[in-house]
Amino acid sequence: MVLPAAVFTAALFLLPVGILLSEGFKVGGEWTLAGYADFFSKPLNRTVFFRTLKLGLLVALVSAIVGYASAFCIVNLEPKQRGRIFGLVILPLMISPVARTYAWIVILGRTGIVNDAIVGLGLSDTPIRFLFTETAVFLGLLQLFMPLMIISLISSMENLPKDVIPAARVLGASWLQVFTRVILPLTREGLVLGGTLVFTGALTAYITPAILGGSKVLMLETLLYQKVNVSNDFVSAGIIATILIVMCFGANVVLRRIAKA
Amino acid sequence: MKRTLVAVSAALLFASTAVVAKDKLTISVYSFAQDAYKKALYEPFEEICNCDLVIETGNSVERMAKIEANAANPVIDMAVISSHDALALSRKGLLQTLDTSKLSSFDDLYEAAKNPLGDNTAVGYTFYASSIVYRSDLVDIKSWADLLKPEVAGRVALPNITGTQGPLTLHMLSKALGHEGIEFSATIDAIGEKADDIVTFYSRSSELAQLMQQEEVIAAPVGRFAWSRFSGSDLPFKWAEPAEGQTGGMNVMLMTKGNGNEELAYKFMDYWLSAEVQTRVAMAKIDSPANMKVEVPEDIADSLTYGAELINSLNMISPADIIDNRDGWVEQWNNKVIK
Image (cartoon, rainbow over all chains, first blue to last red; front, side):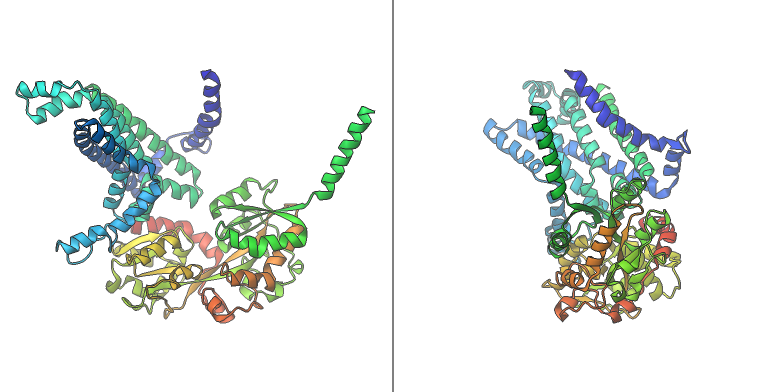
């Protein structure tokens, strides 16, 4: 039963994608990495690459920190309350990413709620420009993908034996030791899963960086769109796509290794 | 007997198909305002020609790629596109030289629309002016150089270089800063120095309209085709008439080489260029007319690029200059402005 599905996937997905991506490894019909060397030789491309990596890592890291705190609180709630709060965590996932991202344009604008609060509290005389900055893209991506981390960690924490934390505390462990020596090792599968989902999501999301960052905060995915839809440059687009795929797989491998260590 | 019955039925089926079969014309157009186009242009033409129009939409790059990929056996008969994109297709030998004697309204077109590429492979069907939209209660714009003045720092948006409006803005800013020609290095440097004062480099006029509505941006260059997004607002938006004048561009219609459907394509182009259709399209505020005989009331004209005086005054960049220099401009822009 698996064979037809495998043939179907190979013929209609893997093969065309492989052909498309292989163009990046050819120059004048010869197999070479010159296209990648040329890509990274350009300062703009390097800036975009490191910005994408930095924002992906930051979003995953902050999601993990907030996710652990949220998941810990949620699993310790009464079942009825837990269901309600869990529903609130899932709710944003049911709303289109486009709508969620556009909401940030209003929230972070000069006349938005954030600037109203900043000016109202006297923290600044004039509104601060948040839109089309890395801060805006970071917030948009965080809001978009953090629920995935929280859900993964809730799932892991629900499987945590109920008495391990009180036992560690009775034996004199501080809360930091409880987290690093008990909770973290026992929930690492959830962290790996959530981390991979958040990091790859942040790396490959197009709408949020395009709307909140525009061309002033170019990321690899928005640069890829430019290469295809403006320059008709499918070779460069293939190179960017390959870099993104490698980064996604790399993140999963690194997270698994950290979890095993 | 059975065999005869089957043969007769098959013959009748083929005959009836032949009777109802209509000619088909495949056109490639921009995806905006398709409902309005359907009413003003497509459906009336289908009634007249007793043919079917197959409408293909998409952005310019996609549509050009499709024409190029099917050059040996064209799947698109006729297309509308910007003049510089048309020149790119023409240079690749993908367009057919037009016999303008088959376009009865040809003599009624503005001079600039008659042979915009210089090789008779396209005719202009619409013009658009570009200038600066600004908040008249907050700022006064009298020159393109005002976009870089300190009073509007942090409140200005510019079009991205990769869009149609980008090179036009560079052209006029260069002029305002005292530079001649289409060598924009100094202007790109000047924008690069002020990059932090520019809110964003927008790609779509709809995006700009939202930013101006929520007062994020108070001045930005934009095409006249988007003016209706601003003119109907409660906020006091004004269309600038800068000292250096307005810029603009033209979209053209063309025919793919060897499409085999030339007769119907000419009929459609002729119909689209006629005063009757151009008036209908202008009244619906879809496109500004290229036909000089079109007359529209003042309130409609206000939303369009209308009239010989305005069209002849536009500071356009030639399609060849755009095609020959665009890659260099984008490279400089990426290094100095986007960084």
